[in-house]
Amino acid sequence: MKKIEFYAGQDLDKAYQDLQINAPCCGEFNGKVLYSTDTIDEIYAKVLGTSKWEYEEHLRKEHEEYERKEAEFKAKIPQLTDEYRKRARGIIPVEHLEYWDKIVPIRLNDLYRGMELDCLLELIATLNDNAKEESEKMEFCRTMFSKQGHSGMSAGLVFSGLKYFHPLGEMLVTYIQNH
Image (cartoon, rainbow, N blue to C red; front, side):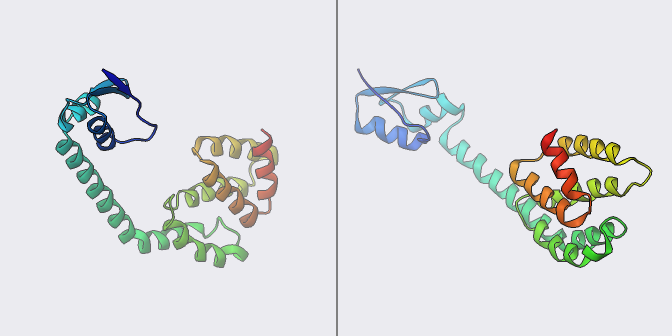
């Protein structure tokens, strides 16, 4: 029997079509041998353990749940905006509060849903702690930053915020990057 190759990123529907076009044949897909005599549901069952309809239904429900959660979060943005603006008082230096207030709704509407706002407030509150020595603040913030779980993009947002919103921000960013 002729053996065909499937390509990286190919989905099961396209694999099924390729099998039908090249019949009689077989091919390996994610470690499972698929045959041109298999039905589409048999192929889905072999690879995913479910029928095509069940898989598509699962995707539909997953998408609906995502949309529901997105709508819930979007509805909370005005309330969250007020909360982040209030929390910043006493943490963000007064001369930067107007800019903070401006970026809060923008950050809440982005991919990270304002996660970096919490991170910034935690880090800046630590930098403001006059009971700690500067070196102690730097190390404490570095540890805190590493536990915050940043991607490269979110780390960049936090670094930019630190540099803008706090006099020790530039020093902290350099410290984190060097340690």
